[in-house]
Length: 158
Image (cartoon, rainbow, N blue to C red; front, side, top):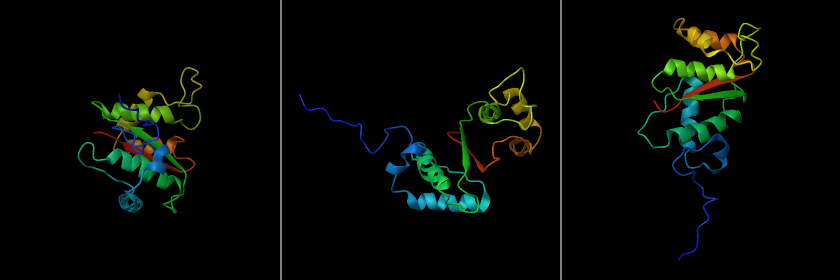
């Protein structure tokens, strides 16, 4: 019988993507991270596409997000609220749930029935998103989602 191999300090997380807290062991993609950040700085919208399993999620989560949080985009600052969602079969409802879990409307209109959590009710959030082409922008403006910095919405695994 052979000796056991200890993988607790393995430099790779296996089949799951790297997380932002694993940025210190994520390396070799600096040029791609710089390219992503450059495009994000120019356009404020970025689509990272590629075949399944090529490392898109790791590139964004362990490469781009930590770089943003260290102030790579100086004009935007280092304060970023990052929301990650998977669209599934009902993308607008999933987006509403993601925003509801993180946001709070200015004043008290976002709270219902004594909810002390500060979460936006999902139906109210979904209705705001469906209100028109600027529904997401209006919702972010009237919530505290980006009050003290920037909001990065990561839509992962279409």
